[in-house]
Image (cartoon, rainbow, N blue to C red; front, side, top):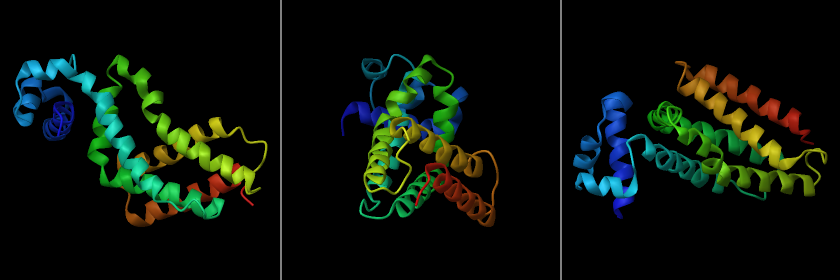
Length: 189
């Protein structure tokens, strides 16, 4: 494993254990088993590692999205998107909370769109496919809609797993309403 990835993994572990305020760079380098100077070769500060941690979350989401069958109907694939993002958010709720608490404290919040670009592109590709197959409204601007779709799904998942103590029945109701909303909003046939 390269040293940059070692630092990222160590930062995730330490930040999840101690939180943003209590974590020091010395804690991260101790966990990584590297010299403190090595940390600064890759990251100028503790908070500068946050975009790299966000990229880990994006990769977790992409792995799950890529498992969705591109031959399925628009409705099936939208359901898969919702389920994928809900699963990843639930499985990595500590990481999600860490990213939001860390990245919003820095100038790195401006990097958010670039970090999420691979997911936007993936969703946009599926929306274009749905249009070509006549499964959604042809008037949809897919690049913008991709951002709206991700934002809606991710916000709903965070509401259930980060901000509220939702039980499984409440989550299921929220997911069902979210899926119906996406189908109606995109004009799925």
